[in-house]
Length: 269
Image 1 (cartoon, rainbow, N blue to C red):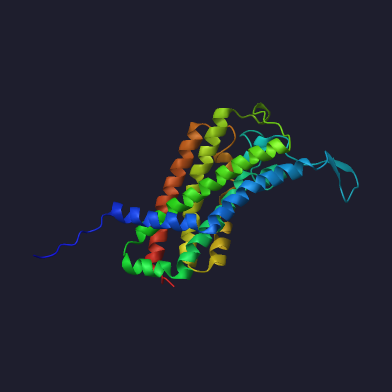
Image 2 (image 1 turned 60 degrees about the horizontal axis):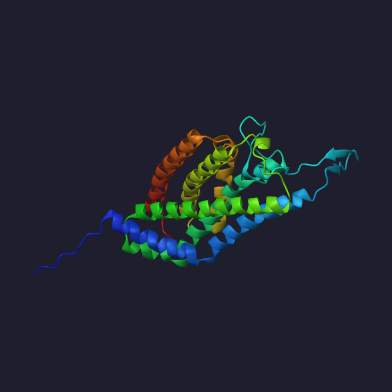
């Protein structure tokens, strides 16, 4: 009797790839270090800035000027639209908030993918599996989950840090509401897909050169950094969530195809 070999379907291949990638991600210390740093960071920022005086002395004019500090814990999550925030690097509250974690995600994706090529895992994998698409989809989902964990860790750390620093939790002060904060967090989580797609495309091009992957991802991420507060303000609505999800999906599809093409057209070493 002729033996027939069952052809693996896309769903089975992807399930197998995801199982391996998630196991690798959650057994490597890298993810835990990144998530732990995201938890500790807001505590340090809120507590240390609250210890600053209400005024500081200008070293040039020797005049007392108001110190830029966090007065409300929700400032660590960003700013409401129409609040006058530029969404850039203008002040400490605009720079040292949850939006900077998208740069952490660049480091996470870059190092995780670079390890695949440095260890020879990617070469062995593609010798057995011809489909590069499975790899791209799996890495996108793993990167998304890792990034979402970092954002949630920062949120929890900010709540704890705000309590320690005795900052105000009044939502009205920052022009937000409970629904707005929930929508804001969902929007920021879905925006992770945009940055993961960018970071993955750079990472598969850089291969085992982790430094090049991280540097390229950081530079690319800076081009979109000022857009984050506009798409996910503190007073977000369901529309912001939909726009973030749609943008994440489009970037994942478009740049996922680019990543797939890079893997097919370039050497795996």
